[in-house]
Length: 244
Length: 220
Image 1 (cartoon, rainbow over the protein chains, first blue to last red):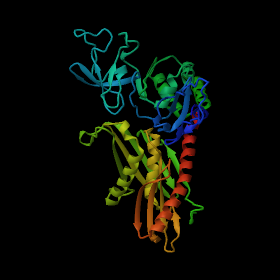
Image 2: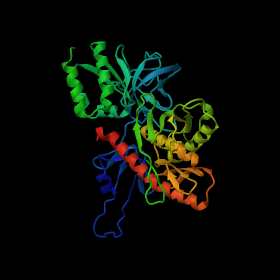
Image 3: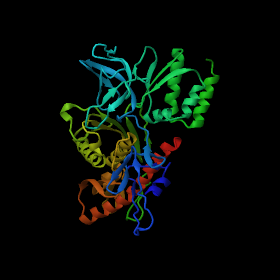
Image 4: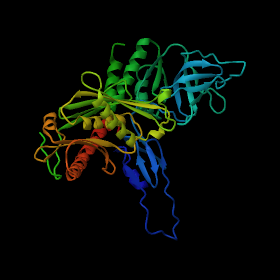
């Protein structure tokens, strides 16, 4: 199965496509047989002894044995450890309810901020944006967010300051922005300095020296979703030469 | 444009599809079969009303909007056909206590409308990235007065036909998932129509694959 899977890396697969274990009829007694292990990422499911694709998209592979389907979708489904940008909607007692664009609202305890104690409450108002990560993300339970890492540090998470602009892009673009040595990010670096916060839920917050520049970045990112690399570079080049 | 019979060569009208053409829904698609055209939008997994909440799977709602006027009994029965097909192919248990809404808007009806609904629905669900165990497609067959089987009939051919049947066929085993029939026909004719539809479904699934491949061509 490992070899058949590897052959398909980079190809577009559809739901219902299957991979089956090709078991050898003869087992060597002298040679040490290494069991084939495959780790299934998003879009792949194990059904009995077969591997079934359940989302349309491109098959990707990471050494040594990780496979997943890269798809373009808009609705976010929470996963543990992912960082997102949420909007505080309700403040009730000791928890905040945060809207992150999923199927239900996540809860965020007031103690889950850096330096927060029972006496020293964080200053969070309804309508504020928070950058947080999922501590619990389970299909059967209410998702729970925290604004601290495992050592109790904020590590970049917390409530957003004033200014800036929030907009939405597809989840595929977000993942492309967050990959190490992302091409889109390096293209954007050459334009003008800006502060960019990218949430895995498709929300992007941008702050630049002027509103005009923030709006340009917003439009560029939203349009680069459906562009090839060369088209994008052409567009960025045009903006760079523009009267700004 | 399309005259068919026998199970050897099946001809369908020209069909086309566009995915994620709407900006607001989570997934959208338009499907065109000859002059029949349907647009589909999917929202979900989203928040669900408490009264419609199911504790171990997602609630699927299908709404069919006719070209003019309000949805009537005919639309209701078509909604049920589409919903039950979608429920069978979607892995709803992966998103418990959430809602999925599928809206199908008729743009033009020139026969084979139910099969066009099914095809548009499948493309939109795929575009939304919802987990599915298999794909499905719809094929409509008409039997005319001479007993000839016509696949993907136009509205005029539907009117002249003695019997009209629509099948939903899955992509893995090419089995019938749903059937909706009208008129009188023999058991032999039914079996023949199923065979013809299964043959035609292969073409549609190949088209699905090509159109999804084209969609992802920019990020390959």
